[in-house]
Image (cartoon, rainbow, N blue to C red; front, side, top):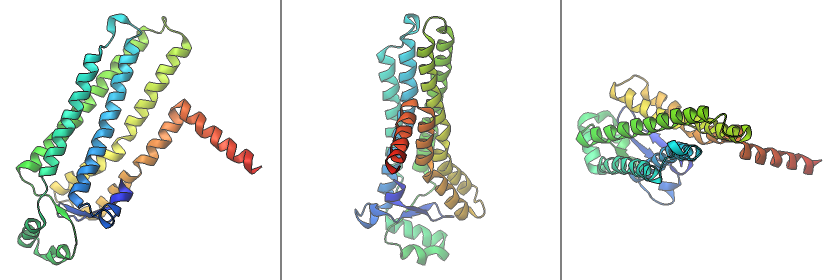
Length: 255
């Protein structure tokens, strides 16, 4: 997604534009590209959350007294998508047209006006009511997803502890490995989500050198995919075996 958009923040104004194939080839504007990226990011967070829910359900089936019914899983999935949908709709309507953005810049940031006029496409977000609702929806989504993950993780370890003497060591180890892999992926998630939040936080307080810091934060975000792949290879046995076999095959062919 970062390759397709190549986003460039235009701080200290809450604005930015894209320079990748989305604009140069497909002529998808900055705001729409941001909305698409937000959908992908939201679905990624929802998928990780549902992985914890489904793992909790799978382990609960080993104990009929604590088994989680499909209705609860459907409810959790519906809740995550309702929250994402609300967030995306608010984000979409927080965008403003080019002329309104230029008028705002000319009135409040006249020193930047000529630079913005020279851009073929950019998007500016104003600190208004719908933006506040959008930020509130994002916070509610983050709190809900985090709460579900924490709840499922605690319940999973409680169930595994109570089932230690009822299932085989191999079966228990497989469940613990899967949970460890999920937790490792969860730990890497802030690499993708925190930099945009930090940029918005610094912007709200007019932090000095925010443009330079935003570049660093954006570079960190773009590393999330690579870091997450490495974590999955290191913590998930099937992936680890696959990569190991590929490496051995390459070296054997070369010899």
